[in-house]
Image 1 (cartoon, rainbow, N blue to C red):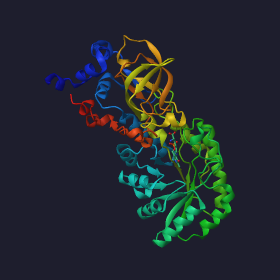
Image 2: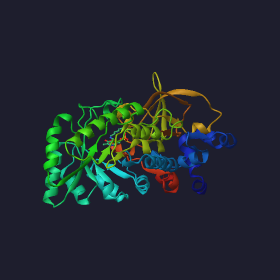
Image 3: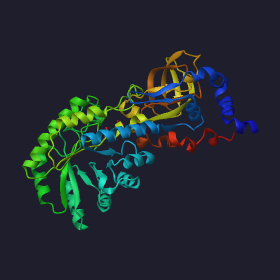
Length: 449
Ligand code: LLP
């Protein structure tokens, strides 16, 4: 047993994954040194995931989300600088990723939080966001959720229907409170993105549309326990035609703000929502989203008076590129017409490919350490879940892959962990942070080796 305690991975590899992989990974130290994997390489930084880190990740029980905290902090710092330069306030959309270490860092930078449920509001507050920096949107806020947020004294409810305003006003009156509210408007703008993440068209359920504006203004002027503080917009997510779409949004917002002010309502906060897209095709080339163009487009196109502040709510763009879902090849299977790589991560861990047909780049980290086996092969990379849509990628060209190889499903820091489920009674994949690798559960913790 003594050698197994000293070389747990050695033992594990030999017994479970065979001599081939063991030989490839262990007996080419000189070649391996020359073959660092360019993991996050981009204009603003270089951050290589070198063989030492791959070796450490290889010991961790898969699947798990690996967070590059260095890239994450640089992304947030970059946004903080731009926001200050453009005098734009940032509320992070915590629906994209609610991991505590990320929220603590974002709140420490003075950003606010954009929440869409009572639990998100409470969680944001626990992770350091002051109540007065929390805004709460969502078409269906329950009475309990409204009550909790009201008692906490949040910055604003972003109201999405006339009935909601009525309920908040009544509840505030019953408890002797005043509630600050913004109105989410549906501006009927096409964000040119996937139909499931388009939110600003009249056919979508979000926001209040123009045909109700007269009634809305009447309610806002005659409700005693709400204070109208501004207008809120969010037209969609993963927007890549940044200058075109956000310029259009700003022009439409200018007209709507002017209309409300003509009705005698002071629009102090103008919240343009989130939506900035990231590069899923090439996360190494563009590890940090194009915040420069986004902020510049807003500054150039929004009309603002001295009493008005401009707000944005990025979610995906702050967190997507900083994480990879790390998984292991369980089996390699040759089907009648194709080869399958069966991974231990499935649609329960990351539902984006199954739900939206979303593309995520996939890399074989172990093969990158095997410079003398350059052969590539097309694989259908699939998960273990009993659903035919549990597919990571069809016909993906990868280096020859073997059982036990460590794989990275890239750009999974947004809408990954937060949308995970326990379907098939699978365990939830944990978060592993690059600056706390020692806390990660090891493969050997789960085996009686
Ligand atoms: N503000 C509001 C009111 C939102 O509904 C959202 C996202 C955001 C801000 C942040 O948008 P972002 O910057 O992340 O694009 N699960 C989908 C994305 C759903 C987005 C929902 N709302 C996905 O995996 O692509």
